[in-house]
Length: 395
Image 1 (cartoon, rainbow, N blue to C red):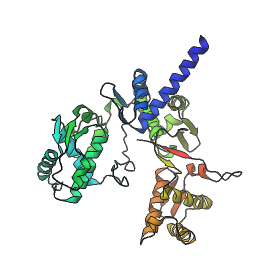
Image 2 (image 1 turned 90 degrees about the vertical axis):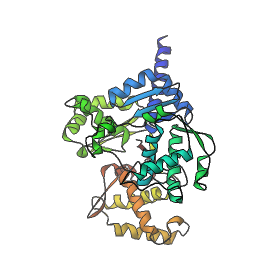
Image 3 (image 1 turned 135 degrees about the vertical axis):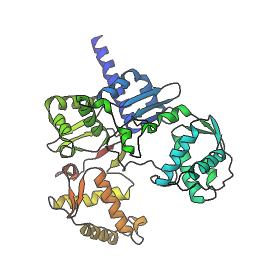
Image 4 (image 1 turned 180 degrees about the horizontal axis):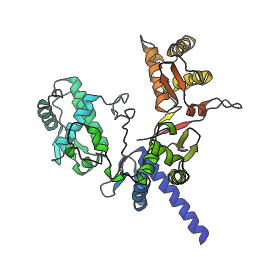
């Protein structure tokens, strides 16, 4: 009986860890899009809600009947490298126009239960017309229609809108397209993860949205801050932490509590003199992988990283890396064809270096691009030449 109970406890712990990582990867998890993960989250709801509260201070809401779970992740340092992305084409990041239309659409959707794409377009035109800082929405503009459709499709992905008649994509070609939507206002209200309500802001400083006054002078704030970083970021360098957080992360008690949280999430904690990183061996809790297949910038980043590591501790001038890419282009004419146009090589270099910076592997200074401690994980192994993969945490 004891062996059976132990096995059941292990299985339950494994399932709970998978549910935690699923929520880290998709903070708005829906039954429609991810039925298996949603089932695990709903099954372990009684344990998951206090787990996130204890270890991260993030609020988890699980609405089993409505078919979604929302993890309200908060960060004191918003990260622009994880933007909302368009669901069409190459999944380009949202630009300022799309973010503005998305937010204004959200405001217009709150009162209703049923609406149409035409009614929403009209309301959007009226709302933007009275906002001096936002260009007026014009349904006759093809570019505006594209931005509008991208915002609507993201709301559909979140389950806020459901097209019950017609297709949102039709509006790309025809401003008089007919699409009927059902609105889930409750789910819409859950999208906002900020601890402070926007209506309570005293001025235009939106950074106040992430203020968490309940943490003033508490040890919980230090633990939560460090664990949040480990769950979200590729690597946590002690030198980049505030003094109090660094002291907590390197102290005996703090380090032990951090180890427990990371282990219960099914992650592996690597500890070094320079910092820590949490690795997901199954790459569940990740929004981007490195190295990544079928990604020319990621492949190029790995190529450049060899050169940067070989020069360590000296930085490599960008011009030297550009010359390396030019030689690669000459040697392999079929490689990176989308970057063969004028300025393409420089664009590829910029994107590849950005990948390395996002993963905390390099730092760009006036002297050039230098390797950071975590980059050593990708050095060629002496025996096999293999490289160690490093999945990235998701926000």
